Length: 152
Length: 210
Image 1: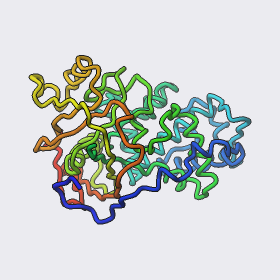
Image 2 (image 1 turned 60 degrees about the vertical axis):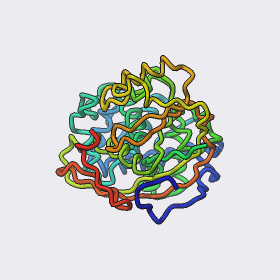
Image 3 (image 1 turned 45 degrees about the horizontal axis):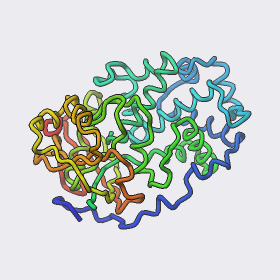
């Protein structure tokens, strides 16, 4: 093994990850009803971890607060087909951002700090950019995908 | 063939399970997130290998990769170099935050790569510019000047001993599955600007890698 450092003792020589069914191969199993409930779970989890209100989520996504709060109250988001409405895509972008932050920072206070602190490389406060437009939301999502790939 | 090592965060999918506390719903949530990503055309490769090749331009600029440049898989020839590289990107996302300490795990893995016709920048007269810590323009120009180079060996500017990294610009040079992997633990102290890889007893100062 090519190393000059001490080795961790939990290494495996063979990965079975690639042989497990991925969500890509499970694409045929998309279920709009379960997915609609899963989105509410994701939003509730985000509210709890980031300490965001339904109104803050609504403002960030430019969706009426009543709509978000109705989804949360009913426990389901209506999804009528596998083609996602632009509002629903915005919701998924936000959940994907939170998913990245969860992977980067175990402590939710650090997730909140990352979102609300001026970022020296981006030269912007991330949550402000996310709330400006759908393009801002997508930009932050892609930036987090990129930095996670590099080691953040 | 040569073995490349890389350190990544690879725990994102767990978030959907934590959020839903239900396997069926977690799968559906992951599926929705997948729907809104660019399509992965390299499904026969392990996700850790395919992901760097997934996204179309424009990209955030990186070493050897301009905004509209080719996708790149970065690896190191030894683990310690990979740990320094990861530490730089890790600390870069935290140095500006008002936080104290952090503990967690990351994934280290290796993959075999075909190093035939590799290009080594070590003797290039622009070497110091190519491995500049902050300015990637010379490295991007190098790729423009060497359009057929798809396996570039270069000294790491984050590793104090400047041991070699590799930029792989063609996924076909990489094996389809990873060779080995391990979960490794870290402790990060924001005030001291230091990240310690606990399994390797390797503390890394921000001053060393920035």
